[in-house]
Length: 266
Image 1 (tube, one colour):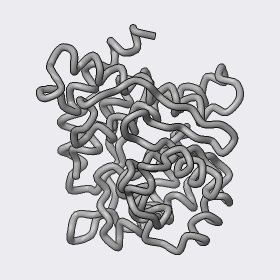
Image 2 (cartoon, rainbow, N blue to C red; image 1 turned 30 degrees about the vertical axis):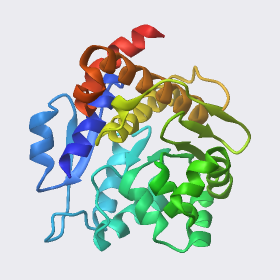
Image 3 (spheres, rainbow, N blue to C red; image 1 turned 120 degrees about the horizontal axis):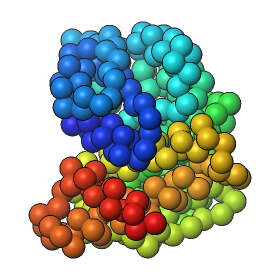
Image 4 (cartoon, helix red, strand yellow; image 1 turned 180 degrees about the vertical axis):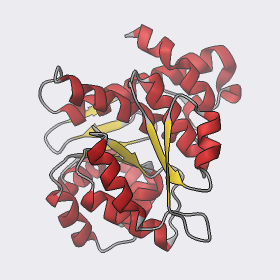
């Protein structure tokens, strides 16, 4: 689903990131390159269904090393095809960089044996930020979605502790938990309840985190701070879009266009 990758890439560029690369199956890489000319594309091997193949991870590893990639995001538009699932697992266990894990990458993890996933993630040398919506969180924790919604803070804190990363639980009053502390984001409204909004958040968070890592100017838990900042900016962009375009008319592409105004609001 190239649209998801396009939204994430555009948001990463709007975050201030200096250089963004989209790794995509070879068949859709030209589409992404045509829509997001400011980003580079890295075509990777694909299967007959057009999904990633696991052998593409070796090329991705070489790219991460050669280009000194600061961080990566995985999941938007990737699908849960068996080959793509193997790609996700090999990438998360083998790529030496911090990661934002979203969308179908989360669904792939939810389909695995929980203890094995927790061990794999805790053995990574680099941190992760996980960005599930309530439905994805229910699959990750093996509980019903209403239970997640009834105990949102508990769910976010549990995932952060079990997987050893930062959990960002989307929805009304987004929660960001590190296992040591939890904050609630107050920005954002109905305009964010549109397909693709989460992809924008993923790209925005990746761009902010990359800059924090590269600059060295953010002290303390960079992953937690960048996740909280991304949630605030994302929600503010949604509020600004809703004010101008209405909650009915605003959609995920508009969020990207309103990110500069959200940065000004800081």
